[in-house]
Image (cartoon, rainbow, N blue to C red; front, side, top):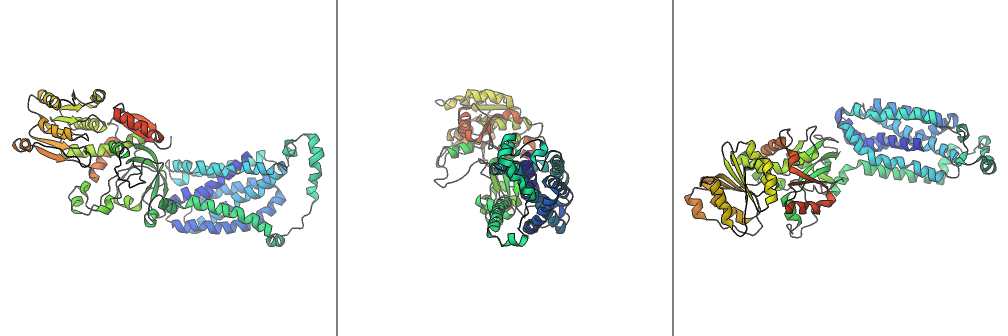
Length: 584
């Protein structure tokens, strides 16, 4: 049974999962048409049917042990030297025909009768157990092959399956026996007395001469039924395994998008403050279902037949912004203000799930970056929240000798402090209601903290003026979703200074501003949202660089199904940044 399970598993590597995982790489590497290669499976199926008659005759002559050994040696050599190295469609078609014939012939024509000889009264149960190799293959081969593809060229990394087939062939010859008595056992592992009484009369099969001919089998409707049923099952399995396009259509893509799409297995997704606001309020006004989560990193699980930019197993970061790079704003360097509404709707979301479908248009327009080797998925997920902070401080020209006030000691405020220090800010003052958050923020370069008071808004203002010798700060950033902090910021900034409204406030609410103060003190006010492609790429490089302390920001890593706990940790201030694992 062990051999049967392993045989089915390795057969899947060359047939079912081979088509799904290896074929995109082979077709790309050899310059072959993916769809044409995929259609060769039909030819291989018909050739396999014809070969079954020939293999059955050989099995009757040489026995299952010898045939299993021979077929799997041929399978392994074909996998490594024809399938993985196919340079034209003929080589690929021949490899499929040989592998289908050898793999299926070994399992169904050689091991099947052998199991009947060993377990004549229990063969149904034994056959059922041995076929779990197919299920194991479906469960483990796709991620295993995907991982191997990340370790090197497919011709070498996937050759392990070909060599495994040859090793399995040697194992078959060393351990398998056509007759259980050759191994010192009796059928069904019964005692000698049971064998003499119940089994020995059945062994006259050696003298039995069947009157069945190939022509008679072809005319037998029961034989056709026995062949057609498993045939349709296999056809269905192949359809499920190889049809990425319909799968991505079911995930929300159009047919044209799915052809050039890819499916990403989400490995980590950050929990953003906007996610919390959206999940705890009816932000979409009943327009559901909708999957939130936009701080997405993952591994390419499948690619469409027309997708050539990315490959299975590649580790990617998905920047949620998508820009046309053709409108006036994009051309002027401010792609974060892209005017193309259609392209803007391609923005990446859906991260709170195990799989994310990425359409061909999103791939075309960009904002997808490869995660460097040695960088964890969790650290890479910081690329998204860091992007907007990076762009904000760059646009505000935060630099050497600046005194910065940051209102809000959440994850964004902590990012603001860390990057402001990197940019050369001299003094950073952070304000928040939560004293615990302020204490944690000190590790990110905060020089002074102010615990604000809800019943005394003037207190925080006075403390800022005190810490700046009555002048106010060069720049004040309101990084909270509160109208009150936006109004306070005007009183904390120096004459001619800059106030940045970074955090969005509740829809419909209004902030009352002292416009005389703005006018006579020459205060500049800037709103900030998003980042350009250029800024997003540089911010991602910073997030994944050895110089950025990502591990300090990520205080909690939780399974996706514990997202409510993550929300509470963030709301109470116990967590700085929560990262969720969809597969835990």
